Length: 464
Ligand SMILES: Cc1cc2nc3c(=O)[nH]c(=O)nc-3n(C[C@H](O)[C@H](O)[C@H](O)COP(=O)(O)OP(=O)(O)OC[C@H]3O[C@@H](n4cnc5c(N)ncnc54)[C@H](O)[C@@H]3O)c2cc1C
Image 1: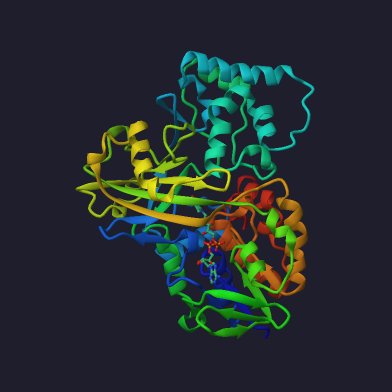
Image 2: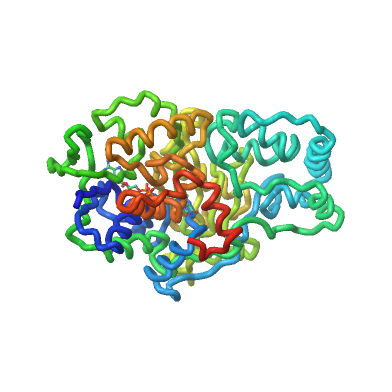
């Protein structure tokens, strides 16, 4: 039996560990730097008793296997179910998401600019293939929708200009505008929200998203999970891992979910190409608020903010996901904002909470600062893996090369593929990696993102 070492107890590392347990494979250990499981999908209780995710986490499952796992971990009644209601706030109003199908809600001038952009696209039959994400936006959704929503919003969320990003990762994520449908919605003044995957989603009743991963870690053999073991050096020739606490361990096969660029830097390997992998950081700001959520926010799940009157790109009504996210729902509700940061988009960490409160007043989420009962702030150095133009070339060479050295880099930042970087994808990347290592079963999620992201639509969720 070859000894398998797993690095990281986020969904990816835990997915691998779970699969090994399912297959009764005994020779493995998992090492995690923190003293809790869940990684970016963990949740944290603040001093006042509010629970916070590290950014609004929603279960967007593409796999029957993952759904069954969720039922098993928290029980079928361990969840609260929600109808997805997402909105865009701009020009002093809410527009239902997807924005492009609901431009009838805009003031006349903006409505016309958006429609005109789409008409121009329909008239232009000679369109060339877009070179980057910005060109894709303009050639698919038109200049008006680009100007009002897609270009400013995408800069705000990624912290990089869409012109340095690829667009091929998009798959199912953005609704492509249909002139007939958009025109009909304008003429009949109707909201059009029936789009996209998972109109219904579920959220843990207690403990936030992190409850899922704490439950999974708790079901694994305790002696094999080593918390507070932060990797600081990897000798790939000798197949040895060194930890900050002075301990070290050997491996035959390594499954790592540590950010790929950090992994290479800590190792004896030289791959200059990793400098071409780009990421943004994320600030998560939680506000515990006095009273009850105002009626206009009551059913909203999350909202997008493309304009510059607030620092956040997204806000989640987090006490709506579960009343237990509030310290006491009879007295307080909660909002959670996300702010992106990169070398191209600086954020003053000490001011971000204050700026978020001001932004929430500007965008009429709260009336005044007097409603704020408490605040919580966490900065995530690694927030979003950017699908930049050079990414695919780097990964195509690097990941297989590492595999030749018995190193399997998987998960959100291990594999750096945003299109398969949600919890379900990360869990399944770990799970599938074990199938590949032990039985040579091809890994679908990592190498064929479109297949897994579309498979459930074509074949039904039980397909995999
Ligand atoms: C703002 C935000 C919003 C999100 N929203 C959603 C959503 O709505 N739905 C969804 O499904 N997913 C969402 N995600 C993604 C979700 O968090 C990830 O899919 C998931 O956490 C990835 O799991 P992973 O195991 O690949 O990586 P991680 O969760 O990053 O786990 C990696 C683990 O490795 C550990 N580690 C790192 N370095 C070392 C080291 N040197 N030594 C030892 N251990 C180390 C870390 O502590 C961590 O526990 C969101 C993420 C963010 C940041």
